[in-house]
Image (cartoon, rainbow, N blue to C red; front, top):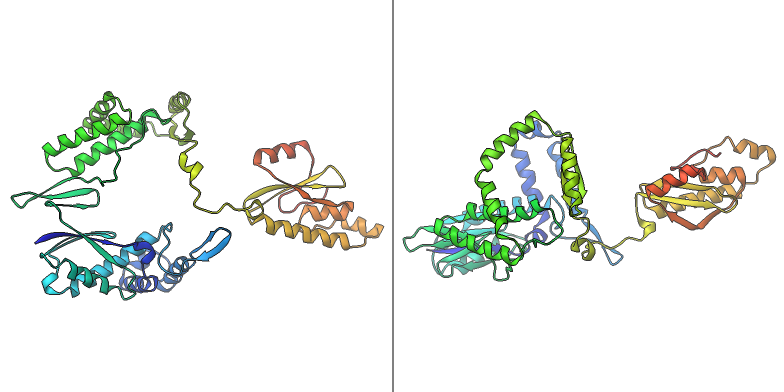
Length: 413
């Protein structure tokens, strides 16, 4: 017998959508408790799910594309879809595996599988697994046990001489031990949280005390290289040793003095801590986040849209005939709304008004206050000098008394 780790290649983008939808439909049909949990029937649920999975549009360098196969990487439903597909596939694979290479042990997490099989049957089983998916898109690779150990997820499974196993923390060869630097602009509790995470991982995974001592030495060395003082880890260990008592006392105090809410503060060293203490006096919890990150400065996964294509825009349009201006907002693309304004304004300009008709037009309302203003005053709109406003700029303009309209439509003055 030998240990054998199976890995799938790019599972999300290779998940067969049509086959997975069949699997989901079959499971929903057999689920007798479905009407008790959701209001939609199976047909409506499948139509909605199919719409979500097939409308995978995205833009790249100004062009719009659609993903033709597989599930989108950023979609929250993709993980569920891939897991259901893998569950069906593994059931078929195990049930139809040849007897001479059938796995004695099989444990899977999403697309990672830990197996125990007979020696010299690795390639045969891998070949069998790659035939289960009819589309041929889901492919398996494998890693074999080396020096009586094999990695699986975050653990290193080690076979001992007596046949038993022990677990260690697994680190890839490319692991650099680079954690949040202690001198970085982050609140202290977040830095201590890094230590707490590493210690908690050690306590949860490592099975033998001697190995835990070695792992703790590695953690201390790595944190020391990241600028952490010795007292930081000692404080966290002390907090964790008394966490159960503190948890009970904090629960009691929370029940007696319930929080009145939470605010999120951008972290500024020294200032944010003082604000946190002030808010806490009024029973208001606080959370802190960095107001500027390297990721926000360097990573731009989506194409930047032109301003005229943006939605949720507040804009300002001036009149050439007077000092008044129109301030509006739209949830649609601004370019679409602007064309509507211009089209309505041209209709108003082409109308010939008599004195009586002009007086009558003052009581009529068009699609926007711009058209009303043109009809009533016979003025020309300045379409070239468009401004995009923030809410603060909008409020200051409104207070000045300059606007002749606001919102998607409004009456003339």
